[in-house]
Image (tube, rainbow, N blue to C red; front, side, top):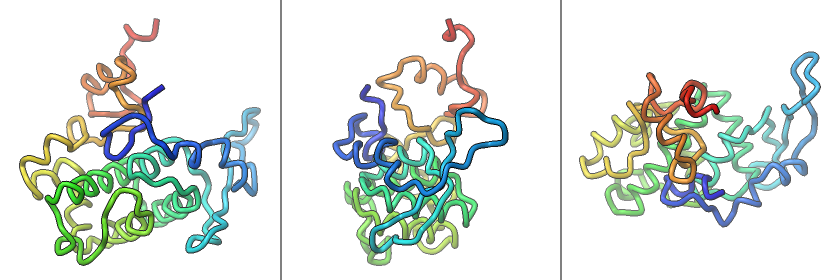
Length: 210
């Protein structure tokens, strides 16, 4: 549908989408974990099988996690996203905001607005799954650039450079979920008018339900 956030919402089409799809997730699923009495049983436990993430186990990842820590960061490794999801659970990070802010930093890096000096040598390019994992740790422990990103995209944009506001993807300081509004016009309106910002749970206008 062209609505999958890719490389900090630069496009809505990710060439690696099939490698982070729900269909592929079946190969990593080790247990179905439904909520009590639920007939749908969408929840599942997944296990990473490839180095260096072998052994990482998480309950998920859900679509938002796949979209924002996957395509939005240019990551097409299911095992890396499983490991990232696990870290977010352990560190208490929201995967939507974490994926968004790392993708934002990756675009800053691609544009030369931050350098390896700012990242303490970390090659923060799109598609670098190990850099994404390391940045999750740095955000959690507020180390170096992670201390800036821990405040969210709006604050990070103001700190790094004013011109980054052109690609700092948020509404009222809240990072957007995994639905590119350019392909879903109702989402564009919804994000804009939601009282707390770009939220995918409270943003559906009543007039658009028909």
